[in-house]
Length: 194
Image 1 (spheres, rainbow, N blue to C red):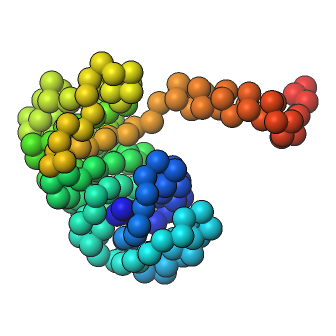
Image 2: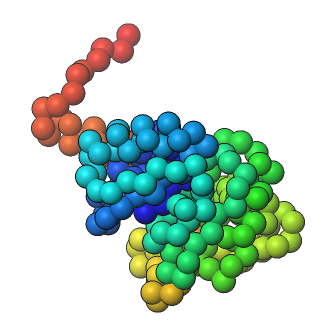
């Protein structure tokens, strides 16, 4: 797995993906080598594997799974069979232009969490507004794949890109499941709202 960015978002992405995939090694790139090394130290608390801290984002791009969790402007690319996860940042789409220009013009399967939101503020925003990509080129919303309306990866050579802008409804649904489980397990602290 490759990560461009070594902040909190990158750690949570690694934590989540490590629950689904067997991750043998992690290449983590950050402008600060100290941050990449700190990422390794922190992440070993939940994932023991080989870590390769670097300041060169291209080294992180040569992985099966690539997560860009940074507002950096460098482009990200991958190999046939790669899965790229773009975690959008609150910065404007113009700042992300260089990061998305290469990956979104490939012959890849682009998936978003919500088409209208992604077109407005996601990684696909700039290529669509500049005519490099059309809204119709977005293959699916993640929910369509999860419920079986559309297929996910269909070949080992296919490159998939997930443009995650994040949805409030996902946060609410996740929070409710956590709340119910905490009640069932007798965990947590009850707060009185007054």
